[in-house]
Image 1 (cartoon, each protein chain N blue to C red):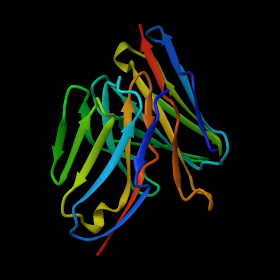
Image 2 (cartoon, rainbow over the protein chains, first blue to last red):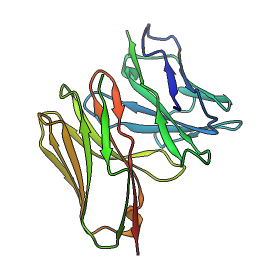
Image 3 (tube, rainbow over the protein chains, first blue to last red):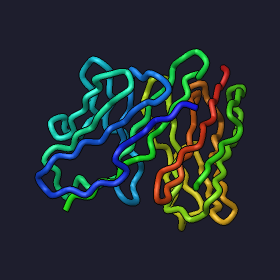
Length: 118
Length: 109
């Protein structure tokens, strides 16, 4: 069945460096993907909507220059955390809707990425 | 491996009815469980978050319960409205976040 693959599942980086997280739709094309973040003991929160071929739409309070999103193809969206700091340590997860006729707009999620900034 | 199941997959009710959505999970070693709403083409909206030590959470017409030992959670929606029509997802947080398949709710005027 359709799968969304997210990589890496865990990453540790030094403060001040940048980290890229990939989200791929393996069996379907996704013109839209969603990026979420979850801090410990808090709800999963939508960060931005990634649109293939155009700029991402960011939720209020999310810094565009800090969290760069690139949706360069119909199967790949990337989230780059630039100049990461310890407060960026969090759980990041992507999702993509399969809008093909046989799917009925099923939403698929990646397994998430744990980011730790030291 | 955690498995999360939501029943029913789809539900259609007349406006005003009270309804219950079910979520079951196989591994009770969880940190929390969260209920989301998703409208077509939109991202998830968080509805309720229940920590593993809690039994229920309430927000307006929504009430979510958690029975960790039996691996079950329910989302109760009181006095349903057409605006409640959406897909409802539960997600269980263990080492990873595992989502159920969702329940598509249609509330008819």
